Image 1 (spheres, one colour):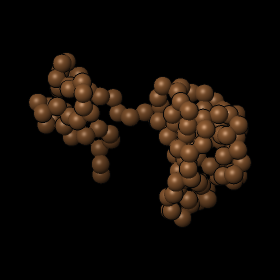
Image 2: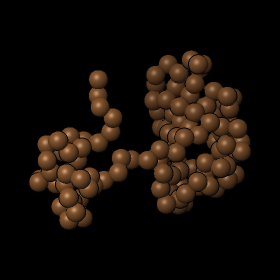
Image 3: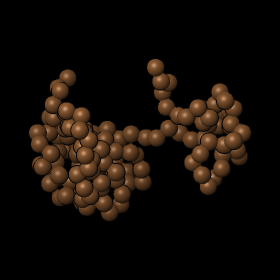
Image 4: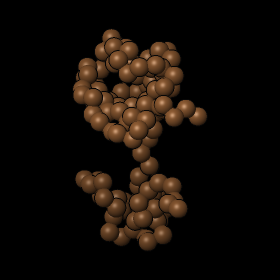
Length: 123
């Protein structure tokens, strides 16, 4: 695996994309906001350097996979990630998840992933 990878994170919205990059040395910095338009994305890719050294990811959302298809057509490795599924239907049960907040319900079982926080176990 190459040690010269630039990891690019995108926060995708209908009209704009916020861009940040993690450099190979560990520095993480925002690059700014670009229009969510094919020509702006292509220009960003050209500015970021060699395509084989780029890894891009963004969160799955209502904007769909249009950006993914565009990036992969440009030769960029792209991952679309999804946040953990909420709520936990097994321990919390239906109707126990507050619809106005993203916090875990107070009645969640301690063994439920909602109470512990979602994601893979930490070592």
